[in-house]
Image (cartoon, rainbow, N blue to C red; front, side, top):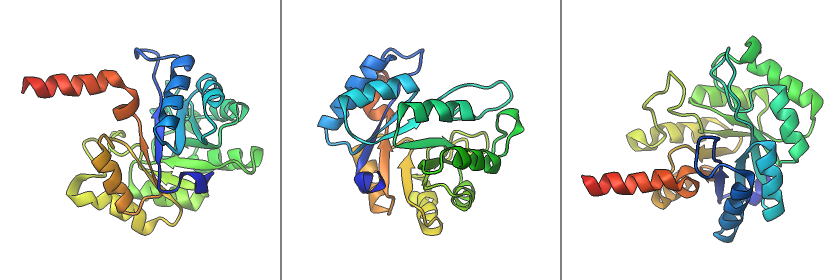
Length: 226
């Protein structure tokens, strides 16, 4: 799979239950549109969406399951239940929260990864991280890919971005982590996508700027009112 996405655009096709485009049929069509536009991969949420998307495209799929837990702020593929669902859906890679936040049932990230590897020996794993240090730890634990997905989304990285200070954080990710680094999170223009690729990332994930028209409409409206 990794060879297929190198240097390209992965489109995140997700719509949560409270969003207007929620539904597996719609996400399947969104993935088809992304394929026609030249995407090299899809990131998708839930077994149902992935199974529908696989009917519409042959592109490799990075799968996640977003589910809330009362004892943890971790919600991206947080437990083995979500991993099992994704393996049933036959996605090509599984992404999961690899931050230092407390996990459901107090399980350590190291233990979780070991349990996944013991059950699914050959599965490709992507670490969604919020700091360079978390990326380094994810590489040590054996993740195949490290992403910047959660930069700015943990309570200790609020207002941080891979774009600030002339891409300083992104540069550090690429410099100190040997496995492929995928840029994700607030890549909301083609120019930013090109820039992060030029800074040495392996591939780029874009979501809201392509697949959440309500947010793009809001940006237009707010800018027009300025």
